[in-house]
Image (cartoon, rainbow, N blue to C red; front, side, top):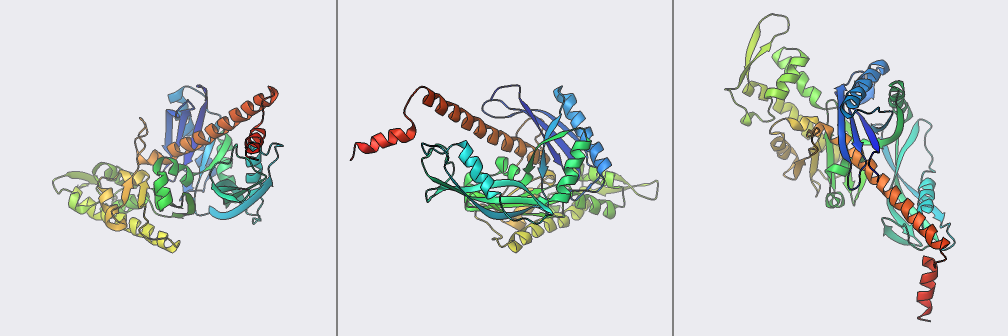
Length: 412
């Protein structure tokens, strides 16, 4: 992939709107710019005020543009939420090439065939995720490109979302003077940087705990099999602090970030700070031990609700691959210890390793970059293979099918 091609991802969260700009280079994408802004007009992942949401998007984009020095006109938009659902689908087509070699057009046609499903009028397809391809009855194929066959099938997962919610998000993007390059399912994209193939095969729960919501994605046998969203996040911890210490929400957020720890046993009574009290001009002296007594119960509740939701979805509370956690809440010190106490010892936290985004809150945006890059590389490879195949035909070289016939004839 040539240097100089850029993509931008847009992650609209409950507390922050983030834009990541990446250059599509050979080997791996290179992150070159980041923009963020306080999220306004959103609540628990949904748009509740379009004008305010547009302002936040524009602010984040402007920030990224100043850092990179280029104009951003198109963005890939992340979508998540309880309105997202998964359903199985099956597609079948006949291989179109005369030599029966399966090419990119055949794969595209079979995926389009899988999209032909009955949907309620209020729902729209976000993505078609292939689980496996079947060539003339041979199943378990990940990539049928270049194989010989007559009949090509695909077993896929159709990801759908509520049209109203999706249209409101896209409307905000368009009103921010941007065009939508594509829609990406955020939990699926996040898995690109969080999960290994072994974890996906064994069975794993991916939890992205953000400001107002927690997105869950469950993987088994290499594929995402369920997704859900819980109305819990870092804002609830902030609100508890604001109520418990009788202070403003903005002050509570600063205290959480500067002095907060997830476990009381890891706090110190010697760490003291002043807290302005609502309704008076005086300040109260509070220590870290008192603050931890507010934070720990809410953190424990979050992990208990995650465990309960996984069980209600019909999966084991302790999957073989464990739990993989990310999102802004994972920045709280000692939160891994709290997670292991409630979810089991098979728990780990993911933080992006790129300079400038070394914070769990950026994992979703970085995941989208890798997700898009991977699929663009696949399309480029398919395009190159097609061009090479056409070149061989023009030069008069034997096709793959003809070579196979010649090889088989030696044994007759």
